[in-house]
Image 1 (cartoon, rainbow, N blue to C red):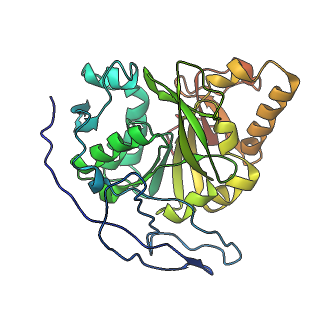
Image 2: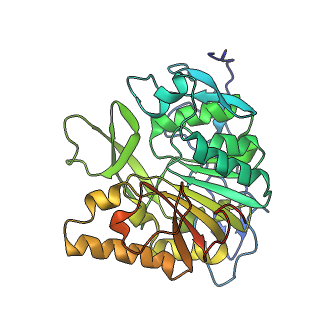
Amino acid sequence: MKLRITKHRLAISCCALTSVLPVLLTLMAWTNYQHNDTSLLPVLKLGSYFNRPTQTNTSTAFQLQDPIRFANETDFDCVRAELDHLEFPFCTYNEEDDIHISGVFLRGHYFERHSVLKTVNFMKNHHDITFLDIGANLGSYSLPVAHVGRHVVAVEPNWDTLRRLAKSVHLGSISTNIDLLPHAIAAKRSNTFMKFFPNNRGRTEISNKTSCEKNCVNVSVSVITLNDILPLMRNKKAIIKVDVEGSEINVFTPSSANDFFREVDVLIIQMEWTFYPMYFTQTPEKRRLVDEFLNFFYDKGYVIYNAYGEQMLPSNWTTWPDDICLTKGRKSGGLYDI
C-alpha cells in the first residue's frame, strides 16, 4: 500500500561545530535553510557521548542529515513494510532500478527477514546498546531497530539511497532514535568516488573516477573513519552490521578503528563475506591483506561464526560462507545469547 505523503518544509542551516579539550562543544545556530544537496546538519549531541579519556582528542568530521528536510521528496514511492508485529513506512526504488532489495519489498516480502529478526529481537531486550549500520542501504535493519526504540547510527554514502532512508525515518516518526550519516567509512578521511549499478543500487563500491565500466555510474562521496563516529555513540555497547561490498578491509584498521573498539564494547559484528574468497585469493599479497584484516579482530579476542548456522568457522577464510558473525570468545549457546 502506498503512503499518502504530507508536505512540510523546515528552514534549517547550521554553524560549524568546534571540538575543544576534551568534550567542550559548541551548540548549533539555526538560520534559514535553502533546499539543496549540500545543506547538511553537523550535530554532536551534548550529554550523549559517554566519558572520554582526556588524553584522546578527536575532531568531528561527520555531517548528519535531518530527516524532515526530505519530507516533500516525491520522486519515489514508499510502501508499508511488515516484520512480524512491526509495520512501518519503507521508501524504495523502482524494481527495475533495484532488483534485489526494493524488488523484495515491492512484492510484499521482507529482505533478509531471518537475520533482521534476530537483530531486532536482540535489541528489544537490550536498551543500553547502539546499533551501528555501516552500509545501511534503504534501512532494512536500521528502521525496525529504531522502531523498537533503540538507538541507531545509520551510515549510507549513496545520496539517492539516503534520501529514501531519511524519508522512511520521517514518515515513521523515529528521528529521535536514529542518526543518518551520508558518508563512506574507510581507513582515512578523504573525498573519493563510489560506483553503483543501475539495476542493483545495493551494490555500491569504492571506485575511482576512471574505473567504472559502461554499466555502472560514479558518484562523489566523502569518507570518514570509524573513530570519527565515537561522538555519536549514546551507549558504551554496540552491535555493528557492516555490508560495504568488500571494503570492510578498509573500515577496520588499527589507525582508524582502535579508538572506537577501545571505548565501545562491540558485542557482535555482522559482516558480509561474499567478496573475500572471490577477490582476495588470487595472489599471496591479497591473501596477506585479509590475514592482517582478520588479525585486527583476533587480537581483540573475537571468534568468527557462520551467521546462519551459528557454528564456529575454521581458520581457512576462503571456505567461509557469504555472511559471518564475530563475537568475543567461544559461545556455548546462540550468538545472540548475551
